[in-house]
Length: 176
Ligand code: ZN
Image (cartoon, rainbow, N blue to C red; front, side):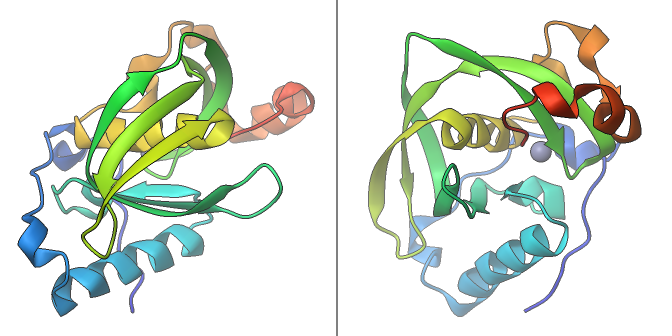
């Protein structure tokens, strides 16, 4: 296993449309090791989600996990597609391993249903709410070359982490 370097904003790979994975390759040792490396990289940098373009692989692969009662189960999404958006929206502070030390508020649908292959190559159908739903949308945006700052509707909430800790931490129920 290995911690991979993170592509930061400004790296053109973060702005590319990621390529679909050949489902026949999911079971290969090489691909399985890549998934392990993605999880190790995400945990090392204290993220709760990571998309393959963030480690300079322009492929439709996302991993996520966040322990805790309001957490996210260990999830692998390969070639994911959102098939349903819930009618209500929620606003949450977001951050990104590719954008150092920044937070900003993003409004997104608070529920999604997503279909994707898991790491066994089995097609799964996941209904997600709250933090899980936001994380899925944030990570899937990376597969479209989008960053959370592109989704912000009020840029006045864009905040350096030091100032976030001073002025905004109290009001934030959840941060991704
Ligand atoms: Zn991100």
